[in-house]
Length: 221
Image 1: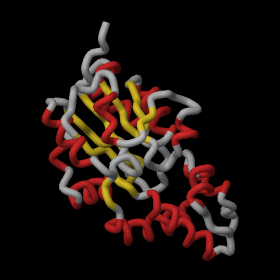
Image 2: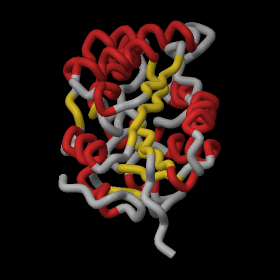
Image 3: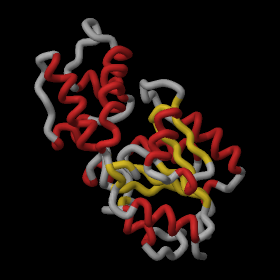
């Protein structure tokens, strides 16, 4: 039996639709240099970045007895927000969102980014009309989005097999599993393909490959 078409898609934002990888590395390197810690290249970032974000900071060598995680988070987010308009959307992002909407599939965003900033950024890129809900955190510490996701899926009222989450990290896979929905990961963001494939075979090399996913309506991208 063929899998039914997905009726709703939940998108991660940072790294999945928004290409902010270089900015995140550059901003974090600023924090590291100011404390005499070695800066990262992309390979080290991909090796160390993960959730919870607090543990990632520890792996980078930050001393929480000198700088609290909360203060470091404020410093990072302040610098990130000041330069966030430097970022661009990933290739094909706008076309994919438009094609999914045209196919009659609803879409939303579930992000570990702050709610207010998430809304402003999506509006800046002119994408707000593609989404029926934008869900971000009410703090800057990126503790996770599982509970928010569960509440949103319950509100949607759709069977889990009719909801697909698209993200760029293994955290997105964990969140999808906790929500009881399907998941596809794109190896274009904060976790590299090799790391993603340790846990799942449902990994795409680009957003343009999304129409190859079983259950997605045929899209003209």
